[in-house]
Length: 231
Figure 1 (cartoon, rainbow, N blue to C red):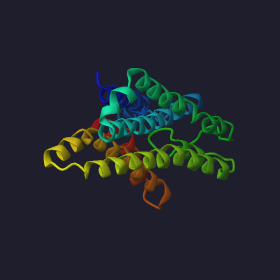
Figure 2: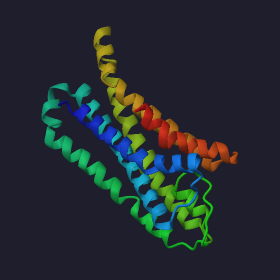
Figure 3: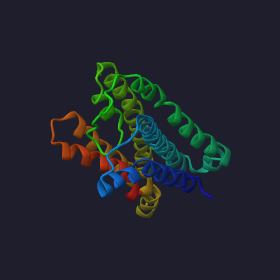
Figure 4: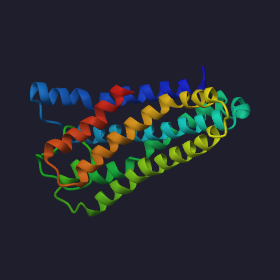
C-alpha cells in the first residue's frame, strides 16, 4: 500500500498499454508481411503511443517527488503523500499526457498525403508520418520538437532536481548503513529512469543524425519495446 508501489503499478499498466499500441502490428508486419495500415488507424496509433509515452515521463516525475519527500522529509511523508495526494498526482499525470499530443495529431491529420504513403518506421511515429507528407513539414517538425522537449527535457530536469536534493540529504547521514538504506529505496526508480531516458536518447539521435535506416528503426524498437520489457 506504499505510494511508490502504487506508482509502480501505474507504470506497469502504462507499459502494457504502451506495447499494446505497437507490438501487435509490428509482429504482423514482420511475421505476416502485413504492411498496410489505414490512415485513421495510423493516427490513432500515433496518438496512443505518444500519450502513453508522456504519461510515463510524468509518472516518473511523481515517483521522484515521492522519493524526495521520503528521504529529505521522512517525518512529513505520511502527511504529504496521502492516498488522496498520490491519486491526484497520478491522475494529473495521466490527464495531462492524454491531452498534450492532441494538437500535433490533429494538425498532422490535416496535412496532404498521397493515397498510398510509405512510412519508414515500424509504427506510426509522429515525425515519421510528418516526413511522409506532401505538405511543408517545418511547422509540424517544430511542434513535435516543442512537445518532445516538454515531455522529456522538463520532466528529466525535475527528476534530476529531486535527486540533487536527495543526494545532498544522504551525504549528511553519518552511518554507512543509513546511506545504503536511503539509496536502496531509490534503486527501482533510478533503473526505470535510466532505461527510459537512455532509450529515448537513442531514438532521438537516430532521427536527428544521418544514420542508416536500420539504426533509426532499431532506436524506436528499443524505446517502444525494450524499455517496457526492462520495467
